Image 1 (cartoon, rainbow, N blue to C red):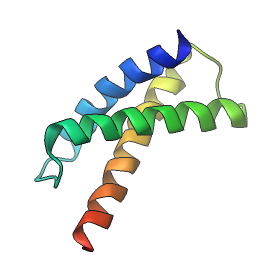
Image 2: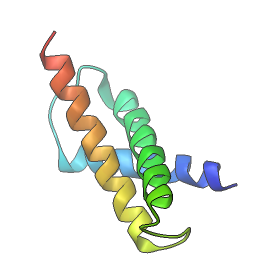
Image 3: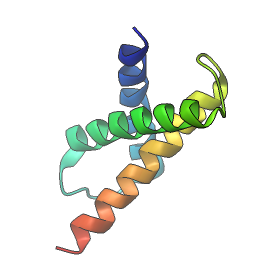
Length: 82
């Protein structure tokens, strides 16, 4: 259930990242939400591995949004270089 929770949180984080970083994405809204899921999973894994927070803390939600923004920014940077 923990992984499913992070995926759901990633959907929300991807939408929030899209609102924070508006503009034309090469992949559209669906790719942005998938990148949000990837960012949330990455932030959740790294944050727990580093011992920064435990499951259920608000820091995990903030980390998921920041991870989604970071993955979206990297995606835009690599897509612009092509």
